[in-house]
Image (cartoon, rainbow, N blue to C red; front, side, top):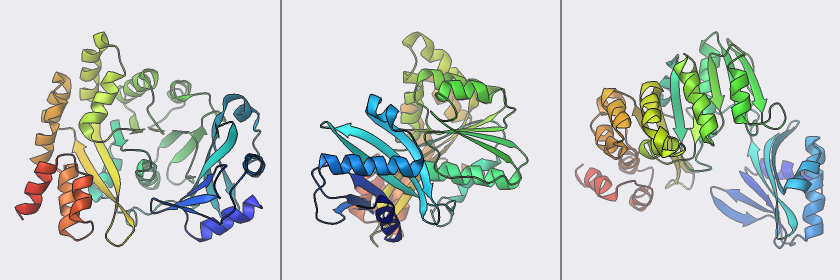
Length: 353
């Protein structure tokens, strides 16, 4: 099987993810539905052959993968697309999931990213978190924010990614893109180095551990704008996730630090729409004095009430966003309830209109 031809065909059909795994045919995901691409079940020998072909296309040595059992990298096929690869071992055989990443940068309007989210690109310092489950579009939102800065500001932007997905051209800004394991060893090492590279904006592909969080908070304190992704659903959960990365004796101090540097938390989910496509729902929390007090006092569970009553300041809760999408006929009532944070609140929003 010619892997390059296979990838080209799948891109032309609008496939989002490609699965190479023994015991079933090559498979793909479209609109979150997994389906087979052909009928021949792959053998372990065939998956190994295909994976080696992917490594050859990427010009990457598979030796580290053979030793460690998993590997992340990206590559491009000219005139086709870019691809993000996670190679791994399962049941003693080789497997991979390949995500299709367009050459062109995403269009915020097509991606349905709200204006209030894009306006966060106007910030000059502090931290903005973009949160949500895996595959919810966090990278797309961060890319759109970064490109707006690139188009409007004379700045030095440094991105730390694992792996690099979208490629940014230098526009008004200088954009330095660094990929883990190729350009740098890990996030903490890259963050420390970034602070010596005269940055104005630092994008962190994922805040994974206490060390990275600590350096990112310090960078935000010292006058840089930090844009970072975090695997958490909802602003309160995101802040709890940051605090819980620290030992108990340090948590009060870090809550104080977060309350001073955090500017906004954007949380998002991808939902099945009534027309069969996927659409994003956004929660936007802006750090006003009430939110900062709740963070400092460890009362994150009360943030939802501030979100619900601060729409005039540009805030919107996830449930309010879902209710609006339901009223506009974009999603079904069942979808809204399935993805809601508080079903009782959502039902009141729906029934009171």
